Image (cartoon, rainbow, N blue to C red; front, side):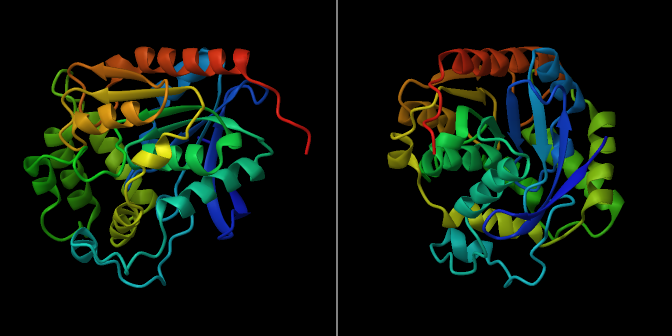
Length: 304
């Protein structure tokens, strides 16, 4: 893995750690990960499938994750208060994270990309398509939702895995990750505990900021409902959701597809809130088909 860093990214001027895979001349696909996730949470094998289908893959760490800038000096996030309606402890919103992502495109010299987001990353991807549509060639929103609190909620048993204080050691972090994905993973596919433990350990080694996940979670809550704004999205859109997603109810995917004109909705039986290995070829084929079709029909940008 060759991870690089871009400096002074976006309006916030943060550092963003990223990796590029495949032919830089191929259509670019920007992978945006979810809450507490890092670029390594996009499986190497899935990235390889995308590269094999003629795409140039860019995966990166969001702010407050991995090797990108962490806002250690930000005010303490108060998630219970945010969920109760007081989001004043938010240090940033999804719009700020979307601006980071567009800033990374600028740093890489990319005028636009096919944007693929998972979970919170899907929310960020949606926000880019709303606020900076010219930078998005196609949108794939996976296991995500609109911000409408009546849809896409987690089941109580999945949320229970987050109970208690954040892990303080590498072993605790690994065990917490195993517990979470036993409850929120894909029941229709084999549970790859060895791979999960390896990735969780590597995630801890790259970043174990105990407060960052709460800052990201408050940012999600503070950003509100995107439903009405999603109706303005005109880029070709694919919405993928697991029919057994316990962390983001399938109603979130259905609402996303219903809000975006012309969006294609794909519900996958047996899939939960993760990316199981047997699905990598199918997911990559769907993303690549959308990307290549969007490029084939894309109107050239007007001169500046």
